[in-house]
Length: 63
Image (tube, rainbow, N blue to C red; front, side, top):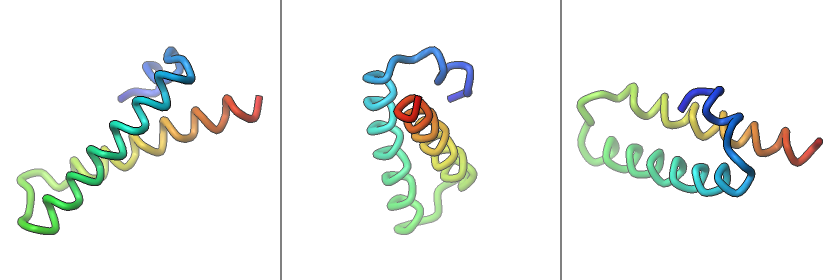
């Protein structure tokens, strides 16, 4: 998910997206722990997407 897409979402949509992204990240980590996944870079991109959404939520709370 790109930063430009994240900025256009509402706070409620960001929270739903964050929950989904955290689940995806968790699933990827668990799958990789059991047997190596084909593209381990997916884990990095999922982690960074979680960070982007969480940062945007924090930024909006502080404003």
